[in-house]
Length: 484
Image (cartoon, rainbow, N blue to C red; front, side, top):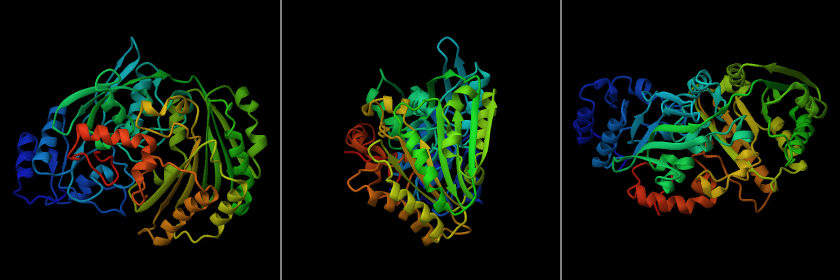
């Protein structure tokens, strides 16, 4: 498996038959500008050449494409948005068949139960607008508008946002994006089209909610929704004075606030450290008076420029998230980059001395690029309420994540990778014996034993389910679940 076919291969003959009435729906490496027009890699540091990229319009066509790939002993991966940190939506290595779900754009809202049904080619920005304009409804999700609802290994994000996690500002109240999923339509490795839910194919449904890349191609989601918040408080504390070592106390205060189990679930907050300084920002889903009672300004705003404003329009709130300084620089723009993550629990908070050492390291290290970010995101709340054995997503005890991210200027340098690796090492060395998890939405192709880091104690069960539904490992990328 994994070998690209020749121009006269059985794969090409098979796919050309599937798309006989729409030759433009399939592309091959021999086509002009194949990489630019069809492959469209997100991480330019990881070159990948798929055997073919197809753009079906129906689930039946997806089924036939899967059968073509199986007949040619090739791997297959779906793409919806294409924001995979390791190009896993392209297979992650040469020779896979890529199913681009861009044409799966259906949407409907059942106003009797407020369940929404939509295609997996829908981008988050479009989904947010469609939910809101069809009853002022929302689901919890991340903040990058270009991410596909079914794509991922990024924000997030087919193998992604609704099937890896989907963590964002509303998650403390409503859970991860995948916790909204009630039912899916999915194409299996033998080409069968079926549906999965808690009552139908429940083991498959468990696997698809957190590890879908290795189990099938989802073509349709059914999700429960929530009423949109009537107003929100968006806040930001920009700290740009002095060296980053001087920010350590402010970060320690942030960690002290968010570790409180009784912290108001209406608060979403993150810390971003970058070349220009540090920003503590987020959203409070309540009144200005309730937000003021949290006393964030008094506890955090040392040498800071403070911005706090109220928005009474949900779409305006989501647009404000997309204006996040880091997202403006990295969201949706292909480039050579590397990223890592760690999950923290109440029992693995960062010691104060390590915080001091980290912020000194941010000042002293040679990063090889000015485009670097260290992002701490608060989770907890509703995400923690759901038992670990309910979904493949395993980090139900995560209090917050750190994501480190660096973009090369032209090329990604070894010293840039070393900078990110050393951040993780400093934290792990300070907490010996802690089995840190990693978020599969921030996939790290160089992570040893990545499957365990992504799925933890759920991995053995996933391997058993994989053996049942995809024993030949047709749905495959370098870090997807393998059959037992």
